[in-house]
Image 1: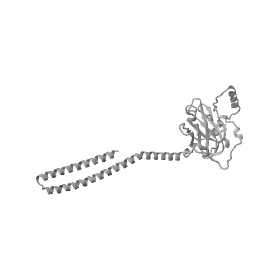
Image 2: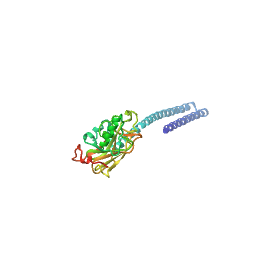
Image 3: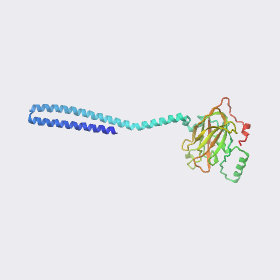
Image 4: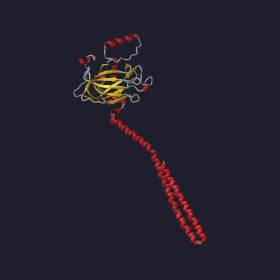
Length: 307
C-alpha cells in the first residue's frame, strides 16, 4: 500500500540522519581531543556519547518493532476487506430481493407447499378456451393425425392446455403450441384477489437438447369479469428469465380492487425456438374472497363461446 512505502522511507531517513549526527560528533571529539583535550575528559565525553547512542539505538529498535506490528496489522486488515465487502454485497442483494420480490426466495423444490395456487386443476380450476392458439402435436401416424383433427373440431377446449394447471415438470409434460404466441383462458377455483403469478419451465440440464429456447419469454396476465369481457383488467406484462430458476414468481404490476375468477394468460414471445413454445405450469396466487368455495361444476357461462 502507498502509506506503507511512505512510512518505510521516513524510517530510513531518520536512521540515516542519526548515523550522520553520531559520526559527526565522534569526528569532532577526535579533533578536539587531539588539539585541546586531556585523556580523562575525552573518556568521559566518549562515555556520555556511548550512553546517548545506546538510548537512541534502543528507541530506534522499539520504533522498528512498532512499525512492523502496524504494517502486519494493516496487511491483515487489507486482506480481510475484500471478503467483508463481498459478504456485505451478498447481504444487501438478499435484502433487496426480499424487499422487492418476497416470493423469489421460496424453495422451488417444495413450491406448492409454501404458496397457494388458485389455478390448480385438481382443486377445481380448468381451461375455458385457448382462442386461436394452435396446439403443436407430433403425429406418429395418420390415425393419430385424424383423431387430433376430429377432437379439435368437436371441442374448443384445447386438451393440451390443461397441462399448465397440473403438477409435473418432466420433459414433455407441457402445453406446446405452434409459434411464439398463444393464450389460455383459465377459470380459477373461486374469486381471487390476485397478487402474483408463477411460471414454470424445465431447467436446461434435464432437456434432451440441453437448451430451453422453447420457454415463454414475454407474457401478460389479465383478469376477466366474464369470458366475453371486452375490457379485461391488465395485471401487467412480465418476462420469464431462461437463465433463472425453473419456477419464477412475478408480483402483479397493476393490482385490482376486486377479485376475479377468470384470468387470461397470454404469451407474446419465446426464447428463440422457430416452431413452438412450451408452457409447463402456470400458478395464480392471491387471497380467496370471503365465502368462496371451489367451483368444480361447469356453469352455463363456461359453455358460452368466446367469439
